[in-house]
Amino acid sequence: MDKQNFIEKYFSVLDNGYVSLIDVMGDDAAICQAARVSYGKGTKSISDDRGLIRYLLRHKHTTPLEMVVFKFHIAMPIHVHIQFIRHRMSTTNEYSARYSVVPEVIYDEYHLNAQSKNNKQGRTDDNVFGDGYDVELKDKIHKNELEAFALYNEMTKAGVAREVARMHLPLNTYTYFYWKIDLHNLLHFLSLRCDGHAQYEIRQYANTLAGLVNVCCPAAFEAWEDYAFGASTLTRLDKILLDFVIRVKSDDPIAGYNNDEQVLKKAEEIGMSKREVAEFFEKLVPKDKVNFDLDLSTAKDASFYGSE
Ligand SMILES: Cc1cc2nc3c(=O)[nH]c(=O)nc-3n(C[C@H](O)[C@H](O)[C@H](O)COP(=O)(O)OP(=O)(O)OC[C@H]3O[C@@H](n4cnc5c(N)ncnc54)[C@H](O)[C@@H]3O)c2cc1C
Image (cartoon, rainbow, N blue to C red; front, top):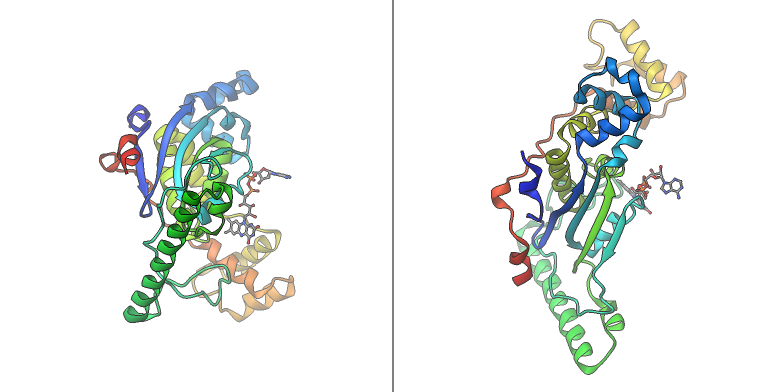
């Protein structure tokens, strides 16, 4: 895939958002060029670029990854942006709602899923409200949004300062920004935000960004999938329990042992909480590979969103 074909293409995210790669400096070769400066002759043993990149990621020698820098143009609901800008090792320049009028663009296509009972931060997969109540709620929300924008327009037309009038606009109003970040920090971002524990909405942005990283630096991306995204860190206690499971229960080291009395007793003995034990067994389950491929034929030019 030629990364040039992806520059300034706009990939749709959620109902009215997008991610576009505006510019990128560097690629897999730039990572290797930087690494070879520090290793000199030592890299002769790792002669090919893919092998060198995989070595770097396995051993957390990450500064060569900082030689690759991306600049994106992104549109996302404000509530997603609040999570997004927590990633401080990046640079953002956002649309100014003090200077300019806020466009009436709202994230409206979400599902009213129920609060999860075991994940206090998350939602269940189900819309438990049933069709009737769901439609009623969505109508109320939409009406509320239209009223908020009507009042906003009324205030700005009456001469109220835009920085004041914007204050009561809903959190699902879209905002627009440029985002610059190097590959090291972007992979860290993807590890956190492509993960199933991240909120659905930010995950959609992370998955699109992941697709673009894959296009620009395929070897580094593959190494990230293998050593970070698809990997798990074993704690000291995990290792003791794993050793026990393998030695004492050598017939089938994983299946069924999350309920095995001896294993649970051993876990208790070494001070693991029930949650740690559950997480330990989760780590041993291989992660399915996620398909991050982007369909270039669905991408739009900037003029599409400009005219919208
Ligand atoms: C599933 C999930 C749930 C979350 N829930 C909450 C929540 O409830 N409340 C909340 O406030 N946040 C929450 N966050 C945000 C989270 O705490 C981090 O702020 C966010 O993920 C950014 O991570 P980061 O600091 O590693 O990234 P960056 O800010 O990009 O930093 C990258 C790395 O640089 C280093 N670094 C950056 N700044 C400093 C510093 N000041 N000192 C030392 N080292 C630094 C660290 O090594 C850091 O990992 C959540 C995140 C996730 C993924």
